[in-house]
Length: 603
View: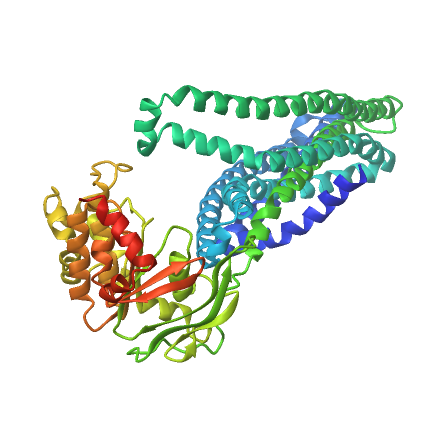
């Protein structure tokens, strides 16, 4: 039991950073929301006290047979004051709702932007870690779902002020009444808090299973999977798997809900007994003449409201503690820092590149693995040279590209650009000089113009550059056949969208690389969906368009690879062979063997 409570207390440290996020999302909105909550919080005790004065005045009139007219003015002023308090309370409540709604939008927008911005700054290795995905998923959910905690803290602020004002009034008449209320309500609070922790622990355990459910839900309704689901009859299997996982989650949830129902219901009886015990005591004191009828009314309302507010405070505190536990992942996510960054005194990338890239004794191991993808690799990519990397899957071709673009840093060794360590260059400036298209390129559910413009967003309004890039990649023919040309929405996610074939999407993606107007162009197997003739045409143009630029491409088709000035064959993370197509064929080594094997399938 002690450990959960320690966890809950530690979780309270999450509240100040979140309050900082709330404050930054809308300072004026937060201030005025709290201001009107103070006004609303003081209305109950003020209204109860005015009602006491009215009752005592009427009682005095009746008891002493005083003429009503002599006291009428005083009573009317009290009635008018009570009416004014009711109007102010109603207006304050509406203003609180208004500022809560505005704050909800501001906070949701602000924290969502911050999550997107921070996620974009993290290392690529984070995105290849399943544990990170669990944390990121919880952070994304917490970014918006914790809005309830923000509103709960506003309610808690108002409830505390209301309770303090009512407690002060009760304390004035009898400290024992106030003590009785608190003693009877504490067990209910402890019970709520205990089950709030159990709920957090349960949700934490269920995160991987819920990610599986999301994946299965998406898989069962995605366009990409529809053909195989029908042809292979997978619908029943996937549905059964979803049912098993969701049933296990439901059963665990239901068991906790039932335990909470019985325990909290029993503890709430104690708090109810505390209220009625205080109520009976006030009635007795009034009956023996200690309190007036007005005081009876005032204390009855104060005890009722105080009991209700104390209970609400405990409940709200429990809710906030519950939400604070969930915020652990959001704040931990914001505390994550990339390991691949620019140095404070980083220098701009060279313009122009004079000597090119050089790998010196480079070894690389992916985080969480022990296998060396690259093993003491040494090679040069001269400025203006065009080379091809080939090798079987997993030999390190794409890893070389990731290291050249500083998506990763070498485990050991050094990569130089114009004789300077890549880590000495400003990362953003370095990336601006490299155009890369990977095999798993993005298909943006945006217009054709935007899909190309993602290669260099500052060129989005420049249709001349957009069209030139489309011409270079042969995407222009595809786009010109579309109804709205460059303003045609691509993909099926949004209304009016048109989907493209795999090869057509690849041509659009290639246009992004050309739009960058970079000194270095890299094509990492981006033409897998093209037929041999179309791929040959892409790389023929690639050779023409990279004249005077440094270029590297990766392809499994030797008919296109042979166009490179130099071919590097990777095997087991090292260079097995390198040279031109003719020299490698004459050598009769690994390259010649792979070339003949592929060529034989076309004969």
